[in-house]
Image (cartoon, rainbow, N blue to C red; front, side):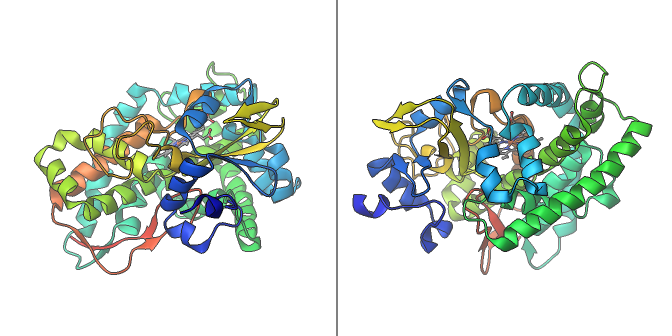
Length: 403
Ligand code: HEM
């Protein structure tokens, strides 16, 4: 792609081909326009070094999205209230308060205690798929695992988990840069329904608290020192956020890795021969097809990036998908190499907002892929694989396969 073609690239109105295959566009951005001014005044950034620095610098770059979300969602909308109250789109003090509670419940010890349940959940799904002529690796496997794990994390009763995935898809879908009216309505409806459900769940948990060491909902209700430290709204919206954050992202990690190990038979053979390569394979999948392709920050003061002067209050689109293919950091970045080491990808972002669930997500990815390959080393994708159709989140909505 030539320089003049990429210089008019607009993330709010991307070319049709971008959705299916953004990587040639990322390569052109990195080569010709790593700091690209957008028609709405925002700036699109793609270099690894720029993103890495911005994620760590909370003095000059803010996560507060009120100014961006007000025109997008409308200040009185459920989506606006939700996204501007969740920790990910806040700076201190709210971010610090919520994050402290979440990390105190997601300790390595708490996560290792989840491992037997995770193994059992994965095996149950593998049993259900056994003997079927054709399966959908997303609906039957990749999407079902995080629902189970995140549901357990907040101890949502099994029979109540049905709507969680659709709510999550609708609420996170509203973050797409090219949101349409239908997406906006679905997102608002999902927040409203989710809140009604959680008000009831929280009331039940207050009446009968769980173990705060393992039940994140009880921990969020009680705070870190047994005193409630979140308001009711903060509590409900951050429950929604944690339920959503661990859903689509992790199911995309599992689905993307299964697709990659179909398309790269050499990598699958290596992994079958050397199962200990699984951790590196998961890291490479996170880099190569990052479930989150974009993040955002706003400038707090005027800054200069790559020779471009950017005013205070400017919205920055941080292209994680491009940064993870930056050849100044990764040798042969377009090659899927399950031995790659070190692998300094930014799939979980970095700095004070680095993903709270990264240890859990990695564990889910390793267990899901290892146990799947143990049972089905010769699986083949068949028919039409359906892309999730998103820009911000990268994954498949259907992966038909024969085992
Ligand atoms: C492969 C799976 C996952 C990916 C790729 C991923 C990616 C990310 C990224 C890029 C961020 C930073 C957003 C930003 O500041 O701009 C983030 C934040 C977050 N993630 Fe994840 N995530 C994954 C799984 C999970 C899971 C399983 C959980 C929950 C158990 C989780 C909980 C969170 C939370 C609570 C935050 C907000 C942290 C903060 O703002 O301080 N994530 N994640």
